[in-house]
Image: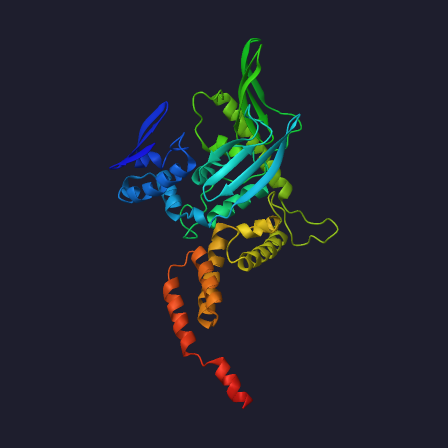
Length: 384
């Protein structure tokens, strides 16, 4: 149960009671634990109003979360389900649903839960800043979900709009390169690095596996671990190095190289890129990305939904520039359009891209439409 009192929110659930201050709330990972996701969403939205009066007291971290909850309109998020698998010795089935309430990870096979089809809930902001709480190996899916959430913001390009967790391809391990066990033949704790994240748990001699938990690589990199997680500072250093080396290897694999059969005169390799040729390739890639951005009305999640995510690569600065061009184009088009339904559609796209003068544009467009000659009457006159 959550109760708002002054500048604090009192939480009282079985086994847990806490008074949340607004600055603390916007700095905490997984706020209001144990509450229903709908109640947590409502509390975060109401906290924005309280935080506006305390904005000067908020840290940079808290301000980003404040901006996130101020900007997002979850009702804009259309429900979508992703079904996928992760493999160790056995293959485990998962389903992730995203809708207006948040993210729901369904452990179909009972990978981390003793009961199959257990569902784990996650707030939008926790996914945005800290990554998935359950396995989500596919980079394309992670990018698509971020794009889907971003397009629910009322102000594209706001401070929080590009401050999400870092994207990277997960490392590919045929066999786990890092594993630690602490204990004896009766009871032992273990940590194992998989190619889809980090597992940790406990086993004993008579029951076998007692419990198994999960940390995504993004969570590991971004969230301070509780004391009960058996990952020491030495383990953390080794896992950090492993992830870092995997990222470097992936970047090198993606670095453009000239075709040996083509002439390379005038091209110099600096150890990172071939200057002239890479620049030309980048311009072409960005031109294609810009076309995809414009064709989808700045709603980049549709690019991924249509299967074109692998062809799309744009920086925040590029998207901001293209969004400005898009809004200028639609601001002109809404004045020229006669059909009210199409004008409404254009206004909706402009709103999703952060336009704030839509009402004035619609009023002006309606006035222009009234001043235009009646096409039906002109046609009849011509026929006569």
